[in-house]
Length: 449
Image (tube, rainbow, N blue to C red; front, side, top):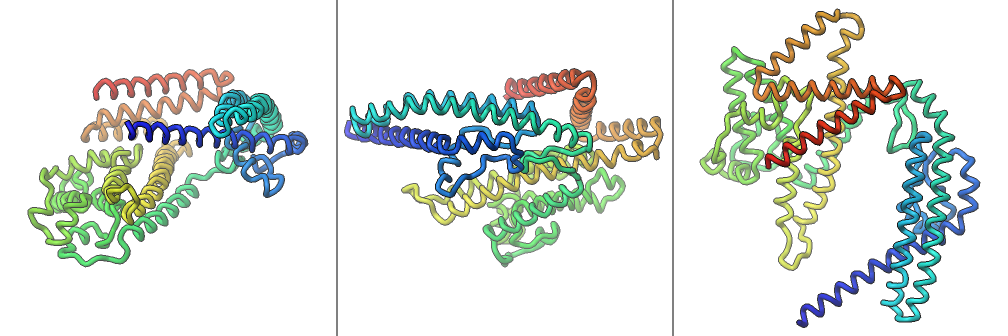
């Protein structure tokens, strides 16, 4: 009973604290809004290139931060975006006002009793009026900005520019430059992960597997996987059908990766070299293993590295390191390293997805370039596509890959072309077909689980 009472008191204390924080945020927003409403109205006729509410002075930092978190104040690219942003701000304003009307008196009563209740009621009523009014003002402001930016958006689209969601401006987008930039960022992050994870090269009993993959003994899981993929593609039996040496090398690469990608097997290998303890319990055929991890070498240019392969190392490593916490729940050095690892690998995962998209887009560009530039006739181009599709279907899971890739490309083409015909009606139809196909796939996955 005593434990239950203490738990109830702790729960009430946490609830009260959270409610008070919400109330203070509302008060900060109201204070910020009242003192800066005139400034915001003047800005409605000006072009805000930063896409944010301008800071009035350094004392308003907290209020401005709460304001921007609640209301949608980023630069809209056109009238449609401004209308959407405005609706969000209006809806959030009314919702926050309703919450403040209920939360403020409750928080006041918990802290100061009856007097606190009436004080909180005053704040709540003010909040219930001020926040919806502010939401309407911000919504109108965003709509105005969107309308003003429409002409710029139309001009930018005619010039072939793309809207940058992060920078909130129209830019010329170059795939090759984006790919180079992302690749450099990935390299820097992997170096940071390696520094936090291994430091200088380690002394091990045997280096044969490391030398086979061409990596250092302190290589990270990501570096090992990347090296394996690079070497395995080079020696893949599909690329070397009449070369028994390549087949043997490919099998050895698979064995090396299966050992070094498993933390326990790698530790045993580093300690004892090649032994019973350093070999997988169930040795998978290298070709099957590669196919499951990365997909067929023939379809890789169209799908990139599969999600299961790109995230497996991060998930396993993070799970292992999170085990290094003390019994009292306090963070140990391993847990701190885990947090750093999680932050870096989360960012790394996002960058790799962007890199994957860039690589696929660059391949598609190269694939159709000869036909677009009239260096190859339509019949020859169709024949080359048919031949490529036939080769894919002859490989492992080839029919599934071919139909999935073909369907995805067809939907994207219909979407792109349709959005530029008949006021975009055909594009909307294509988007609906894509959603329906995606929902169907999700349903099959859910029912087969």
